[in-house]
Image (cartoon, rainbow, N blue to C red; front, side, top):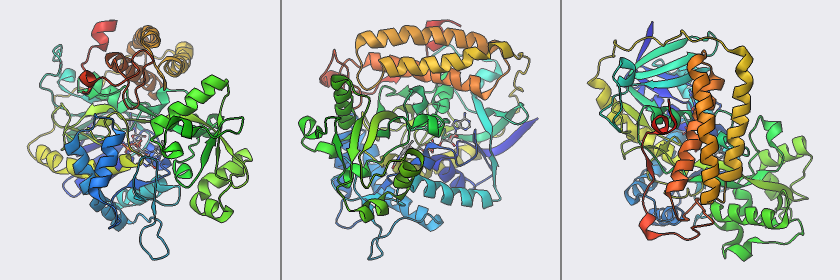
Length: 544
Ligand SMILES: Cc1cc2nc3c(=O)[nH]c(=O)nc-3n(C[C@H](O)[C@H](O)[C@H](O)COP(=O)(O)OP(=O)(O)OC[C@H]3O[C@@H](n4cnc5c(N)ncnc54)[C@H](O)[C@@H]3O)c2cc1C
């Protein structure tokens, strides 16, 4: 049995839902999502959406800020497109029902974040993502053309590979026919055939031990696309958020609680445990420096002083202002951790936050596989370059969801469903006694990445990480091909592919630029000012 849709959307964050609503005006849409539909990075976005909504602000300034953060690797055409089209996409979101904060005069209340030269962050208190997700999901649920498949895990993208064609050449002429999707309730793998497929499966923060990303962010979309031999680029650029609440991950199912940049934007200062303010030593913008600089400064303080966390202090501001701007953070800190941010400092550490690299797309969200489009954090569009400017990611997802529409609709019009796609091979067996391997290998890959491929890297550390990742790859592949498919096993396999991609990309960049810092190559090298495009070779290099 196959399910058939004009459009298959993998992921129900801002990117997937925005596209689904548009595509549903042109045909039938399946949205598959591996947990409850709101569970996504989008849902946890606090700060907001960067967009030029104030007449006193300018598109040119937003472009300039983005280019500066991107450290020479942004695609200027893409930056211009996103920044120029962004405000209209934000207005559309408001028309759909998203309710953002207003100032006393009724205009949007615009926040300011690190790296931005103006107040341009559209937000809903400090729960912007939740509001965006709520508004989009409400519309998606009531649309007759959209079927929402919750607890459905996309296992593989379907291409010629599944029709028996041996694909040995790099980047051959490939087409996507849909995806194999695991129904978590029945354990059956569905064959969902689609004329156009949109990959919107988000980021991969879970490849590190400390991350602000929820458990779903295991890089499945990038790993699937990579295995399907799509182009993947710039995986070395993982952004670490400077300020996540120290020791909070167990309380939040593995996700460290994020203390938004807006706290620093509103005057919060960073102190080491001796009570000394240290950011002015590292950058003249102090706490408002881009997040990579702030994260590295904190990392340096922690390593130099042998401490586990630094303090973020905004208690010198009026209580009403703090509670007005950060109601969710203040409540969470008080109720779950007994910290009163209006009166005392907050212990914080950096955590993996945003992946700038991903599946390469052109300005129409087309990947290197025909019929496969992608938008949101799963992609590398050229917007972020070597470092993402705060709050540009929700914006990018909104803009690319719209840009994907016309090419995806045109492509779908010329396609029929590929009925030659076989059923999923369900002949593998359960291996309940060996499940301990999955849990151990998941922990190990995250540990390896945190130890050797974190904020500060070196050739030696990367070589060490590479050896360990190869070993984990071999063990896991062996287990995977013998074992009944499950989401836990697929996630592990995907995390290992992501780890491999990050390590290999980092090894290729023999310089320090943006988010990628190498102790043995501490300066940018003009000769290295290009994207790191990874060709498929994991299997060839490491073995079957
Ligand atoms: C704590 C936090 C705060 C942030 N704050 C901001 C901010 O203020 N401003 C900003 O611009 N950005 C912010 N970001 C980044 C931003 O939230 C994300 O980049 C953006 O929401 C990504 O949207 P997306 O739709 O691409 O992916 P996501 O929102 O992550 O959605 C991905 C979806 O894919 C699904 N999925 C994944 N794998 C599979 C699979 N195998 N099968 C089926 N479904 C799958 C997931 O379940 C999820 O529904 C923040 C991120 C975090 C974690």
